[in-house]
Every structure is written in C-alpha cells, then in structure tokens.
Amino acid sequence: MKLSSRLLPVAASALAVAAAVVVPQALPESAPATGSAVQAEKHDDFVIVGHRGASGYRPEHTLASYELAARMGADFIEPDLVTTKDRVLVARHEPEIGGTTDVANHPEFKDRKKTKLLDGVAVTGWFTEDFTLAELKTLRAVERIPAVRQHNTVFNGHYQIPTFQEVIDLSKRLSKELGRPIGIYPETKHPTYFQQQGLALEPALVRTLNRNGLNRPGAKVFVQSFEVSNLKALHKELRVPLVQLTSASGAPYDFVVSGDKRTYADIVSAKGLREVATYAAGVGPSKDQVIPLDATGKLGKPTALVADAHKAGLVVHPYTFRVENSFLPADFDSSAVASDSGNLFGEIAAYRKAGIDGLFTDNTDIAVAEEREAK
Image (tube, rainbow, N blue to C red; front, side, top):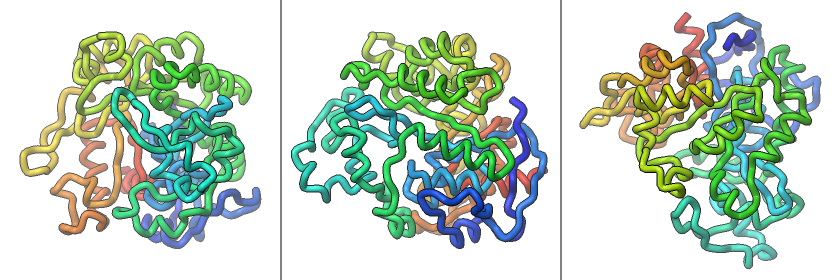
C-alpha cells in the first residue's frame, strides 16, 4: 500500500517534542504543527500507527492523543470502537470505563456499576452500553496506567470521550492542515459481546464510513478485529483493507462461542494465514509472535510468521511498541525501574530487520525518528 509523504519534526528530538507541546482538545485550523520546523519527506511503505493516539504522552483515546500522534508523524490514528446505549460509536479501549474515565467520581452514575461477563470473564465497573452519548460526554478521560505514566496524569479531567465521527472529523482537518493524509485504523472491540446485547458494532461502522466517503478503494482506512466472523462479514460490505488481529495466547472469542477449537496460534500458522488472506489484507500479531522472548526475557529468534504472511500476500503490523522498560525486552531496558524509558529505537530496528510492514506504537515520535535513521 503506497503511502504519501509524512511531515517530520526536524528541530527537536523525539522525546523533547512530546515534552514541550501541549495539545488541547481541538486546535484552530491555523495552529502550527509540532516542532519549530517541519519538512515533507518521502518515505518507504512502512506504516506507523498511533496506538490509541500518542498514548505515551496523553490519556489514550482522546482527541488530544490522536492529534499529537498525527503531528508527530503517524500515518494512521487508531480508535478502538465500542457503543453507547443509543448506538453511537465512541472511542474507548474497552466497554468498561472505570479505569479510563472519572465515572467513579460521579455520584449520579453510582447505580450504573455492574458486574458483567466480558468474553466469558467477570468484569466489574461501568460500561459504555449503559450510558447515552450525552451522559458519556459529562465524563472526562484519565490516564489508564498512572503507575507507569505518571506524567500523563497532569491531563486527567481535561478531555472528553470522542465519538468515531469526531475522530474522523479530526483526521480530515489535520490532513488538510498538515498537507498529508491522516488515516484511521479503527478496531471493533468485543464484537460478539456487543452482538449478544443487541448492539452490534458493524452496522454503525459501515454507515459511518459510507457517510464520510471512506468505504472505497484507496481510502486511507484499515479495519481490524481480534475476532474472525465479523471480519468475514465486513469483507462483503467494506471496500477498505481488513486486518486480522491475533494474540500470543488464547483464541478469538467468536471461535470459543461457536465451539471452533482453533486458536490464535492456528491462525498465524502458514495454513491459517492463507485463510486470513481470503478476507483480509493484513495481520496484526502481538509482537512476541514475530520475535518471541527467550528464557532471560531478551529477544529471541524471529518466527516464520512474517515470511508466511508475506507468502500469503498479507502485510504484518505488530503491536504494541512502547518506550517504558516494563514493555521492552530485557536487552533494551535502560534500568531496573519499570517506568523509565528504554531503547525503543533498538527494539523497533530489530523488528524492522525481521521484515514487518508497520507497527502500532504509543510513541509515534520515536518510531518516526527510527524510520528516518533507517533510511
């Protein structure tokens, strides 16, 4: 998939850009791009996805996080999609929002706290499908992992939960302002769970893409899911590429419900990837499915996944590349402190050497800087 040029900050280091720039919920159209100087540069086909936005620097799934990722040079911004009671798609990592919003501080919603089975696991909290959009808009986002990203907590309470339409609107505005297309890479979260509640995500997703002129070949859109049956159904309705997500353990929940005994390991086998290619254009594996860790926690040898996917005609976009030591292989740690920043440059370089076609990252600026250095 040939991509257009990316604007790259050239007058500031990767981390300095993030530290220096405060991006509000919405900026005027005349607002300057991040950094004191920018330039358009051609680059290869490597795809950099702002995972939940620039979630290494702002609370995830907020317009501020998405905007910062785009300004840092992301090709795509990634909203995870769940639904409200009144069937509006909104961006949250999970339907349960106790850990990503201030809902617990709203006494008017105290009675909404429930325990539900989410993909077969009992989860207690507040769920988006029990709120109207108007009610969700009274909440504010908070940092999901404050112990690791304490610096992000300064932004707690400043940003709303965005709708999918608001994310699309932001991508269109920034595409115009930055002079390059900012793609969207939405994920349908827990599709079987929502289908079981009569709140299927897919019809609203298709309608929204259609309404925005994005359900067409050439639109800068990928649609992804950890489940299989909904992707196969979407393959019949969408004209944009689909991506099959996989995990290092377990199985798609729709397989579990239907009694299909196949696992994610089966999906990323050579045979499984050939089947994926019948309905999707890519695979989004957990990064340790591409290069597993050895017994000491260091990077081991690459698996056959990339070669098998490429042989099947699929692109490979693994997740998730993060700068903190707690998320890095041991050989790229900078210290024993989990929240300290380690050598994400080195980890990304190792995975690029393994042949991946793109990646999901919480630290867009570092991925962009590594790509420049690799040229």
